[in-house]
Image (cartoon, rainbow, N blue to C red; front, side, top):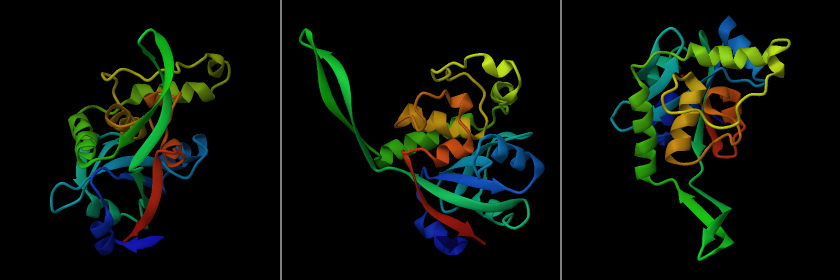
Length: 208
């Protein structure tokens, strides 16, 4: 569903995830190698009157820019901007050790306003940091002959790692709510991985 920017800002929520389809060469490479249509990811800070796009940008690092400034690029640098929203509530079973024995218990997590604030706060803490070019190399080497045979780590990376756009979004969601892409470390998560995540639901596409 395509919605004009003036109407979209009435529907967009704090902590929503933006997935971009870029039109340049770098965007084409990202989309091709992660088997999807998205090349960039960001989180919305809607705490003020102007919706802000918080992101990790190549050659710029962590930053916050107005959503309007990105929507204005649709049709030139950007093909489209899709809005995804974390699920309001998730339930799952877990095994716990209680009173000397193991038992299966049901867990529930709810996306409250407090959780949304924590997700955005995590993203804001990343702004000003350098772009994670090291992570780009880690991803790229798994597509190269022989190097791709090296088994990648399956656990999430530490909080001190520098991020790329999608790893920053994954990190914020994982630490404050739930891992959007289980069994894949943050640094390996691509924008298209986020689009396929069961934790995120497509809402609408923003037009000029």
